[in-house]
Each structure stands twice: as C-alpha cells, then as structure tokens.
Length: 222
Length: 222
Image: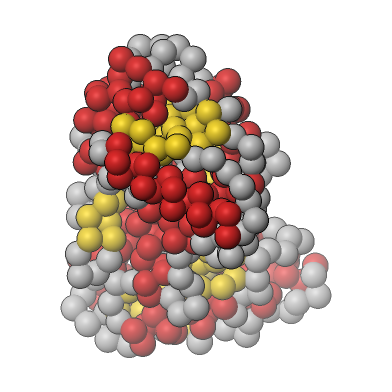
C-alpha cells in the first residue's frame, strides 16, 4: 500500500515513516508544502534505515503530489494547518483514498497541557467536514509520543485508539497500524467519539511531566 | 485512617469500600443521604467481606455524620449531586480533612459517551470551588470501572491518575490508593489539569463498547 505522510518532515510524520518503512513493505511518501524539504527528510529517513540494515527507498514530494499518489493520506501536520492542508490536497483525493487524522488541538499553561479542540468538536471531525464527499476519514495515532516512535532503538507495547464511520477504512488503518511492531489498535467508535481520543494526549503529557520515571508516555487499555 | 464514602451505597463507593476494607485496615464509613440505606449497604459489605474470610466492621451514617468523623471524605456521588453534597457536609469539614473527588460529568448519545464537564471546567474543580477554605481537594479514582473494583474475585493492575494543589493531601491519597492491591498512582499535576483526567473515563467506556474482548476497561500508562 502507498502511504503519504503530509507534514512528514515533522516529528509524528518522521516516527510513522520510520516505523512503517522499518517494519513493513508499504511504500512511504513524504509530503511537505516545500518539496525540497520533503526530499531532504526522505533522504535522512533512508540513511537512518540503512544504518539499521534496512534498504528502503523513500521519496519526498509536495503535499499535493504525495496525496495524489497515495492510497492512505496521513495528515501529520500541526492542528492549525489541518484544514488548509485538506483543502490544498482535496482535488487529489478520490473515493478510494483514506484520510487519517492524528493531530490534536492543545494549549499549554503553567499547570500543564489542556485539550483545545476546534469548534466542530475535534480535529478529526474538522477533517471529515473539510474532506470531499466520499473520502473516508479515520482518526488514529493521536496518542503516540513522537520521540518514542521515531527512535527505532525503542521497543514498545502500546495501544492506538481509532475512530471512524467507515468500517472498511477503519479496518485498513487497523492493519496499517498493527503492521508496526508493538502497536495494538482499540476501537473507540465513530468519528463523533474523536474528542475523547484526542483529549487523552494532553493527559499523557501531563502524566509525563508530573510523574517520576514516566516519559514520552503511552497507554495500554486493560 | 478513617475514610468516609459519601454516596457509599453507589457503585464506585461500593467498590472502594470493599477494596479498602479487604486490602487495608483503614476504618470505612458509608455515607448516604438516607442513613438507613447507608447502614443496609454497610451490612451487605460486611457480609461480602465475611464470606471471603475478612472480618471487618463497616458502619453506615448520614453523609454529614460520616464526613464529621472522617479524615478523608470521598464524594462518591453522581456528578450532579456533588455540589449539593459538598454544601451539605461543609460545616463538618476542617483544615485536616481531605476531600476526594472521583465523579465525572458525561453524557451519552447513540455514538457513545462524551465528556460533559460543569462550567468551571471539571467536577474536581467544582468541588474545590465549593469546599470551605483550607480544605484540601484531590481528584482521584475517576477512571476505575466500578464493576471491576467491586468484584473482589478480580485482580487488576491499573493506574489511578491524581490531581491536586496540596502536595501533602495528594501524598495521603496516593498512599490510600496504593493500599488497594493492583493500583498504582500517577501524578497528573494540579487541579487545573483535572479535566484531562476526567475525560479519560468516557474514552474507556467507548473503548469497552466498541472493542471486542475489552470490558470494564482500565488504563496503564507506559
């Protein structure tokens, strides 16, 4: 499968790119508003993978071109760029494309991190509102600590809650996610339940800040 | 230590009462608006504990009297009764009392459970607003599935995030919580971070509803 990571030069994009390229044979496309930046990041990821004995080709493109070529498009951009990014690539998406939304709106104050969703209720639902009709949207990967994901030295045993209204698209994303070693997918229901998934992220950050011996915190449901 | 469970006839109150009585030597007081109901529940808990070889005395009282006698007062009442319950017992609390808030405001729709906090931001902060000056408030036990807690057959290995502004009170609640076998406490920061802890509860309920093989879902931070 071809996976485009829009904003694939950022931290969560890097982590997903490295893990998918290392653990699976999916084709990974790095997207950026600046195609040169995308190509540079793609080369860095290739070098990193090569140093671990994994010979992979990763290509970088402008976001539009990456989206055009992909079966699954991951919006690995900051929450305030998500809407614009969907608009920018909208005409490259078709009924076969699955859009994946991992971004979380948060604001920080002296006490910690707080959930700060857009007016529609969640970033994931914002993506669904802005996506062209017929394009399936799945929320996933909101709660993964990017540094932990991007460090291939680290093994983990973490859960990924997903939400979506299209069961086939959810199943595709579930298979993609579980292709990464150590990830298990749990189903949190339809898109309308996205806020409860996204709001876990600031809790993980707060727990990592205030609890000794927990850093880059992830979650297991038991 | 003397622990009063106001609303101790309800499900989370029952679970905490049974676990504390079984696993520790703390004195457990069951509170209810109806003292007769409190006494009946207390006797049922004694019978349950006796059937498992644990001979404990548990007494039931009106909420006010339970609060008056306790070092730690747990507001194990539904979220819409929390404010009134604090008001009802306010004059029985003193600077030595610790108020513990486990309630979560939620609303359910066809899709799932959603976080629905009071205007002040969280039930825990509502308790802090309504509590008399000098009474320390700690948020804890929001995320424990009551059925799992109340079934002494079940062992578990679960995390309890706590929030509070008074570090001594937090430490007392941490020790009380970890007195229950299988509970670990993680620190989620000050009271201002309570919403992120409370909003985990509807996610756990949604994951339990939509994911096969997960029921009465709890959490581990890793």
